Length: 197
Length: 230
Image (cartoon, rainbow over the protein chains, first blue to last red):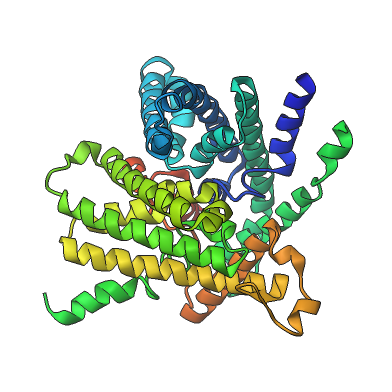
């Protein structure tokens, strides 16, 4: 049991990294990765929202949509639940933990339309995970997102000081370096099976 | 309105304001579904259908939806059409449905669609919004097709599944894998900015659905201020 959870966690952080191999959450990955502290702030908010979203959507799917045969409403229900959760979180943080709101607040509106959050909740259901497995997989995906953001912010800092050919300045060179970071993650493929075989 | 401006509404999405290549929106599906030409076209057409329908409905409801809750309303409309497309594809094109997988559901959070609702449909008539949606959708499909052609021809040596004689023996498999997606997209944007002679400094904030919520203060927009300070 513990071993299978560990496999889920490690594979969603390293092998099936949401940003670098499944291409989910690319917008914040490219947009908010200019400074390391912002990248970490965004990553932490995403982990938090992913866990919260899974906590809400898994029971909804299992105890409400499935027994009533309403599986086709999944997309609508999930996106609404996530949007409502993010709104609620923003209000709660603003009222009770203003210090945290100051640091995470800016990222919250961006998270509603972050495909990684909706993606992880849908994937948990379609992979047939139980509740604990779903939570672990969400944690793994969030950690993977944070890791990718953090690593890439470091790379990005160097790009800012470099002088690529004119057409490559800005977004294109960032994408090319993302490709190189992604190659490094590509190396993890197969490692999990070997480690826990 | 005269005829030329109608045509320009339709045409601007194709090249001048191409959502993917110029505004750099909807990057996730652009990278994820362009491993083969077939899935790219399927993704492009599915998104076009959703964009066209949601633009029309949002534009028709533009005087009814209260300003404060407009984003959730748009999301509901878009999610409704996405579910329709999902069900139709599952019933009639099950192979493509499996191929696109979760990315089909993720059309809901595609910033192109929400962006067009926010930027265009809520201020214009139903007919204009339909033209805009169609133009943007076709522009999106063209961009996906361009990416997929680049990746499939060089990465797999095939085009839409048909093997190309010489290239299939000297293919570069990494182009169809995830690093190749970033690489191909980077090269294509560089090509576009070389042609238009406009470097792409930042991700398209003007089309971002959250732009109004963050008032341009979102972290991705900070580069300009840095430039001023430095």
